[in-house]
Amino acid sequence: MPLIGIIAKKNDVEEIKRELKKDNIEIFKITKESIKNIRNIKFEEIIIMKNINFEKEEYKLISEIISKAQYLILNEDIDIDILSKINIQNPIKLVTFGFNSKSTITISSVTDENIVVCIQRDIEKVNKEMIECQEKQIQVKNIKKIYNNLVIFIIKELHNLI
Image 1 (cartoon, rainbow, N blue to C red):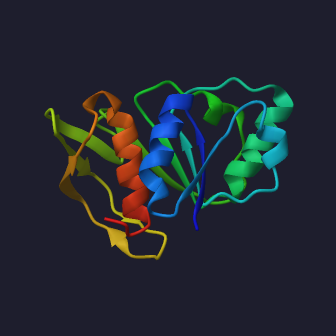
Image 2 (cartoon, rainbow, N blue to C red):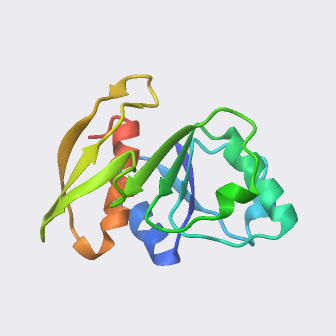
Image 3 (cartoon, rainbow, N blue to C red):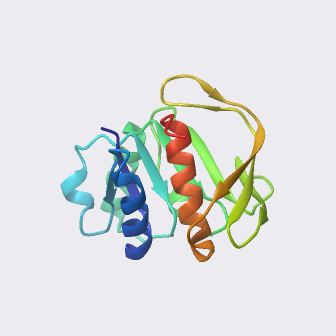
């Protein structure tokens, strides 16, 4: 069962958890309060959907946690300064998403029921298969939570659940 750490708003974490529970994926919310207790946990992916301000020691801990992960998944539409304050020690696969034209996965179009995403660079899945550059249509339940839908899509793609 994949274990994924996420830095996001509480309601976003709960929605993503709900959607991925049936796929046997465990989501753990990373907060300033939980950071010290999870330093020895190895997450398969770390997802950052909001900026968070840590103390100096906490930045060191989050750096260690991210360094153990296989993937770092970032919302590139928000200003996340955590990356400038940490030192990732091991190679990690970076997947960025958002409306930003330089993101790995960009949002091409949006309707009430669907979003079309463009995968702009090949991405290696957990099983070493490749997700090739392409456009994909995603059905969405709540268009107001477009970033949550993208995160769910990315996790399902990485774990061959689509």
